[in-house]
Image 1 (tube, one colour):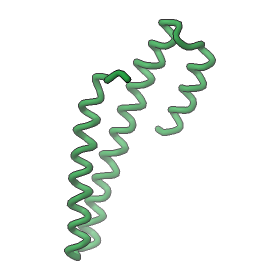
Image 2 (tube, helix red, strand yellow):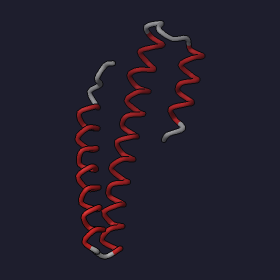
Image 3 (spheres, helix red, strand yellow):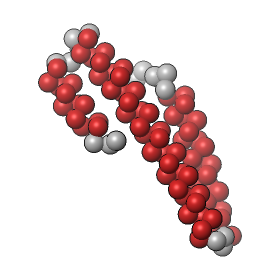
Length: 89
């Protein structure tokens, strides 16, 4: 498995989201206000969504393009993979 230049940024974003999730759990256990909690949940959701978009775009730009240019995968197979991964955007 190869690491892409975007992976360190994605890891950083997901670790930050993980920290926020732990904070949200503590907020719930402490009985904090629902408004405060939902605001933090929105931040986590946004962080995960952005990480996912970066990963999908990176895969399209590097992996799929490389597979076609290097002849590692047929155009039809690459197109099927492209259609499959873009479902997650």
